[in-house]
Image (cartoon, rainbow, N blue to C red; front, side, top):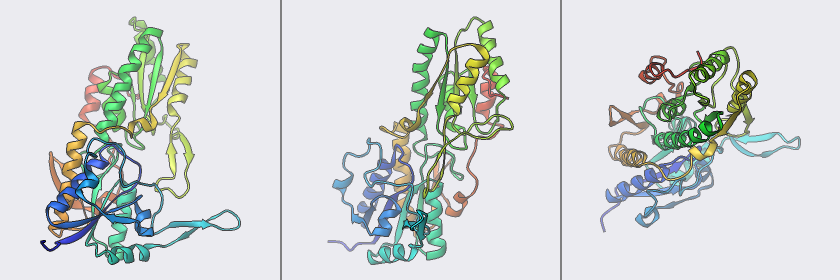
Length: 366
């Protein structure tokens, strides 16, 4: 039996996302086929704190390529630098620093590098583990929002976009039958990639994104203009982070102890109510929510996830740590992981997709 070349570990952090299992599969298979041991860490950084990890085998990843979710489990909480350990007598959360526990657990398992599959919150923790604790880290960009800097595309985005487009196709038929305005609210946080791509693919008449604050009068004009043209229905796609000019984003709730405490949502219903009140046209809102996160990844996301997973192990094999694998001009590259800790990657106002939309007569609310 040949000697083990090294030991790696992999975890998934943050929200679930189509393609996570495809990345895990690629990481495990690439590691094992190149003589490395690979630990799977359960439930994100919680598993590092609780030493909940086990060696993975090829059998562990057999058949998981098309599956949604993550076989390792994940969580939006459990930051080892600010771990919620309980509550005091007044109900206030008690936070503890568990970085030393994480480092000890990694050392006890002789782990040479930790592969972190996650969004900005998880990758920021990975960066801090390297910066403050000397842990070798390689990041894999994951989010359906496509808003991570440094990469042209995150896995999970294509699947979310396809789901939103299918929803728009279905809404078209009922909108036309009932002569209604149908509003579809999609995810995306502070970036409008899902709304923009699905809106164009699904033939939306109005596309509202966070990058362009909207004037409700512009939206009303578009709906009435279509009426005058004999079109008795309209389709509106709105990103959850959209806001009116001079207004604020709509917050659904706050979640304590989460990487991202602010949870957006509700702008679609507000928009539908305002359109109906101003036009007299029956308006309805559909919120896709977590439907965009679940289910089997598209072929594109499966391939991208597989490329990312294999490339992450290659970075470990080359001894090039503290990088994130990224997509650039359809090539997988490595960038310093600290570059991901900046501002989110938003839709540029000079995007050709916005220009194309305007050429087609799409209203962007401005």
